[in-house]
Amino acid sequence: MARPRSAGFDGQREQILAAAAQTFATRGYTAATMNEVAAACGFSKPLLYHYVRDKHDLLAQITSTHVARLEALQAEVAAQHLAPEAHLRALILQFMNAYASAEHQHRVLTEDVKFLADAQRDAVLAAQRRVVQAFAQALMAVRPELSAAGLTKPLAMLLFGMINWTFTWLKPGGPLDHDSLAPVVADLFLGGLGAVKVPADR
Image (tube, rainbow, N blue to C red; front, side, top):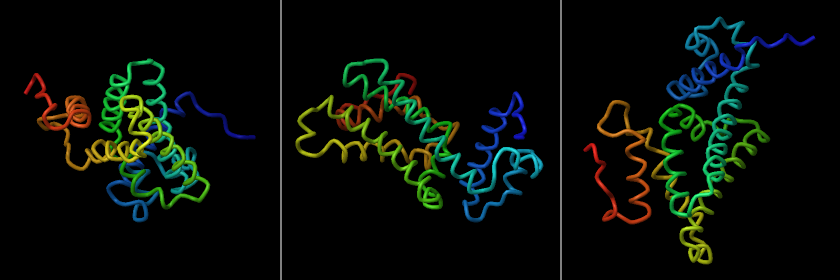
């Protein structure tokens, strides 16, 4: 009979995934060990194996959970039924804020998805494509004529290029944070450099 889950199972699982993501992001997936993950969690190794099967299972859970969170954010924005430009700005704000607390998960997603089994990798990549398509549709709603020119997806990828890599240079405690930078990204993308407004607190 399967061992019943404790009341705090999901919370501890999230703690494990966060610690594992940080370990993989800093050490590299191939170099990181389950001993290091257990130490980062403050768990014994046997307890760690109560929550995950192995290191590969950890990678699968980190990546699938991260893309599922991004899809959920996209759905939350869609449910607000905003006007096209407000919808796109809300997407940018939500994703910027999501990346503020998911630096390590995002690095693992971008660098280590290649280590997943084929079916797992395909599922994660399919979820990523759905997120990109949601942004492309948001762009098309703002500029419908871009669709016929085949530009909505490339523009969506350019927008992700602005958002995705902030974790490489936007450091906690600096003069800007993700929340204040999000409208700057939206202004720059929608209106060019001349449209960028200086945040009120600068």
